[in-house]
Image (cartoon, rainbow, N blue to C red):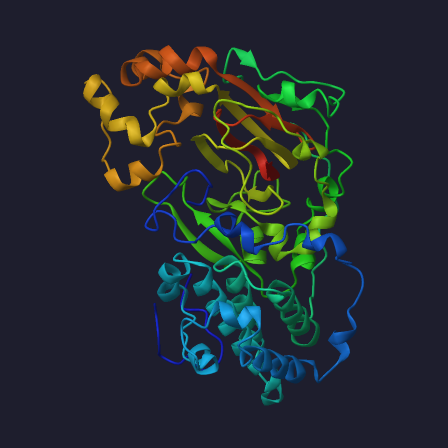
Length: 486
């Protein structure tokens, strides 16, 4: 991301694993994942959200001044719970917030240290933005307003907007700026078009079983001990139609919004990195709505998109299965630690968007919303053949025929649930089995015979038990998926 997103006057002062279960170090994961801050987020907060209703405060020209005064009054009252969160930094809280740097590169290590740092950051963001709104008579430029919205998005993405009423206040600030200063001007967009299933070659001798009609809530816990597909499970979701259209996705977010984007092949490779990118720019760069479009290798992966863009939440339905108790799977350590015991993530990318083979500690209802994906699965018993990062060096010592790529011990130790190998390449029908079996004999001994594969179509849902190895790759054009960890 070029430059530093900072609004108004930046006072020099104090400074202080994308996938849950991947346990990536800060060097590997530059953005603290929202899932690790799930206790600060209310995934059901948007249940009362009315996407077509214009709030009255948007027509109140005094709202920024009144809201800023109210926030300052709250922060000066040490009996307020939000104020108590940040008392440890400075009893003169207002001055402490004014002196807080908002540079993401500077604050990121601090934000990872605890909730109080994230509270300090979001309040500093809100004060900066409300003050900017209050002085809006100075004829700010469009780019300045866009940077203001981006700063508010940073408060959600980097800090999780913790604190009572803080996330709602961020929403309000963004809506106010977009309403008055960033009206959306959308070019005519392609109408929703039917997508033809691309040709798909089998990646395993076994197909992932499909169950239709969907099982009852009482039988689901037993069935969920092994993976299966629910064909057309979500075909009635508005998302399966609405999200095909780029203008709709942009409209639901509004102007100036940014999202965390992965750039490069996948997170195991040297060219991989994460940056904050404008939402509309990301959709343009992956060629959304264009058949086979994929101008750049970009992926919005495992992101709490509904927390940022609650209008999209109305297009999906939380499956009732996430409220069941699937039982004591040997790899299951319990549901997510947030109040809802549920983590909802979005995955969006262009052609070939790739999630390498990895395991997760939760049950997962993975819904394919737009586009198609190739799926490769293997049970926990396949682990000896998966060449996980924290086992790769040990395996290479055992078999001198195994390729020895450049090792990063710290990175390997933090990605023990991720495979170093490309299961799609090794499983492809045209793979050179002679060479592959020489370089990765344990894969063909322990994993390949147990593997299952399938192609997910729009509306299909895949049930993945904890501990199962799974890899996904978009085929054809762009793809959009939603996962529900429980």
